[in-house]
Image (cartoon, rainbow, N blue to C red; front, side):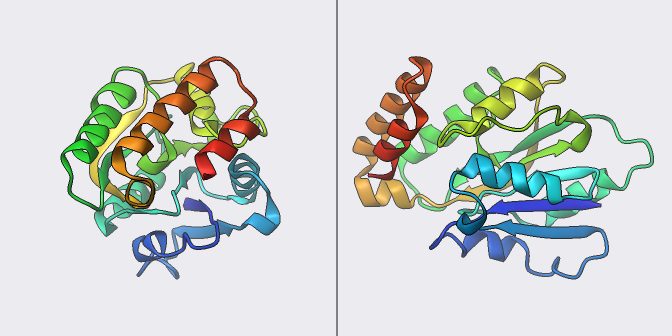
Length: 206
């Protein structure tokens, strides 16, 4: 079985719902939306979602991303193997808007951060064999996907599957592309300097 966990937020329930069309009653799929009423931070919601899953393969589906049916069908096939290999990874990052800098962000995310550093952000839609989960995510408000990647990389390197994870560019549209790019770099520096995640998250939300 494939278990799909979605850490939903208010206003984020459009793109992921399109991914799940036709899979709601699939015998080999369980869908577990986890809302803010069940956990304040995304890390809490992902922890809670994982512990509710029954499938051998788990997909953490970003609420503002869309996966084509072929991507989910591929994961279903992986989950149904009699002796599945222990693997994890994500899908090709792509924004739902066209812009030179957005294409650059996606290229860096796919080619550098994912392939060379082994860091898979949630908007790649992270999938993993449940045997990889050794301990719950730390309760922090941002970069919990980086922490998850660092733990999984201790066991195996992530696989980048050739299906697009099409992610909303709403923050870039709302804040301006250059401003959002600068903010993202500030947040990464703050994470590296171990600034409290609650403060970094408040900057991100602004």
